[in-house]
Length: 218
Ligand code: ADP
Ligand code: ADP
Ligand code: ZN
Image (cartoon, rainbow, N blue to C red; front, side, top):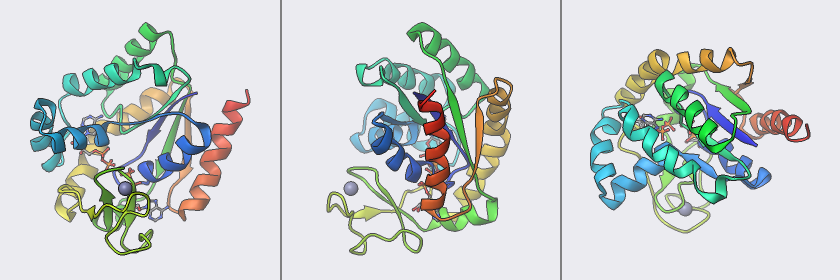
């Protein structure tokens, strides 16, 4: 099962991904997590990506496409994968078609998590993330058991540099301009499933699960 998760920043993609990968046993391929890991490790990739990320802009297509191609070619993606945060431009979507073709695979379903902009900003500014395992929390909507500490690995939580209100607004703008056309690209192929993400996490998951199971059983 080769799945893409789409939705504006803060829609709940990473949150739903946690349950999806556990339930369907496929790897979670998040370009945002890959870039943040690279920034933390101080690699060349990280140095290149950091300024774009902090400005709420997209990392250049050729850089992003390269890391995705490499990741999807790894053996753990043979039985399927969950792409989160990629593709975000039509150029990336077209490149992904090429990558899929070269691997003899196909994108089967695009899950679009829709949430209105005014809800998003509150989600983003309250987000707290674990550096070690990338689990996401929210100070109000999904707090950890012990304040500031990851439930899963006990590491301290942090707030992403780009999770400030001004950067969040900029990212929403970038999404509307550059990523909405990606949805049209996949809508033309008839693979998009829209999910109302403006509900509690568990209710969203019930719908996501139904959509993916109906595919998985085919
Ligand atoms: P969110 O979960 O809020 O949507 P991500 O973690 O997916 O954010 O992405 C954080 C940042 O990483 C983006 O603002 C962008 O700078 C960079 N990034 C992630 N994925 C891509 C991509 N596919 N193309 C370009 N830049 C990306
Ligand atoms: P994305 O990966 O799309 O950027 P996240 O999964 O990181 O989004 O979620 C953004 C923030 O919103 C996080 O703080 C998360 O805990 C919170 N969140 C996720 N899903 C919901 C939901 N259904 N209701 C309320 N808050 C949510
Ligand atoms: Zn953790």
